[in-house]
Amino acid sequence: MSSSASAKSDKKKIPESLRTIVNTLKCGGSEYCVFDRVALETRLSGDWENVFRDFSSYCFTNEDGFIEYDRQLGVLISWQIASLRKINTRFRIKFESLQTTHFVYFEAVTDAPSPVVRGGCACCGAAVIPTLGLKWAIPSWSPVIGGFFLRGS
Image (cartoon, rainbow, N blue to C red):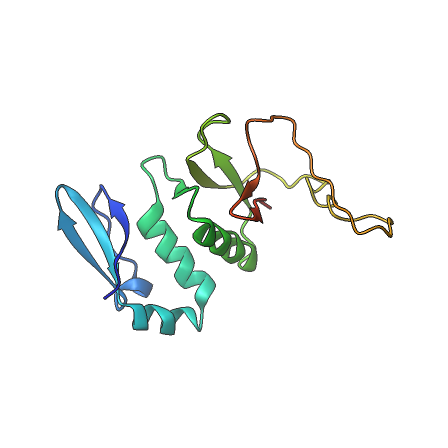
């Protein structure tokens, strides 16, 4: 078994897709997800986007119903973005504040899509010079985490 992935504070039923790869362990008033590494790798090699969706929903959903990651979990955040895009799920990335961004939240988007994709052409242009410029309005916040740019769809 691998180490725990996340502390759980409420009782939830394990999704069918995760029953063969996860066990729960209670310790000190918290509940932890403990994964069988080999079984998880086997499941992720097939229908990875739905398995990852179930994994993130079960282990990282907060009391408000948002999937929540610590900002330093850039790899999991990247997998979350990739899985949601792969299954054509519209989402919004939120932060608890602009001054102390410790957590990244994923929120399902139900409103109509915008006719203009925000940030969709930030890296496109006719310039021959290999340069890239990125600006944002609030200097205390950065969309760059661990070398990756964060963007919802």
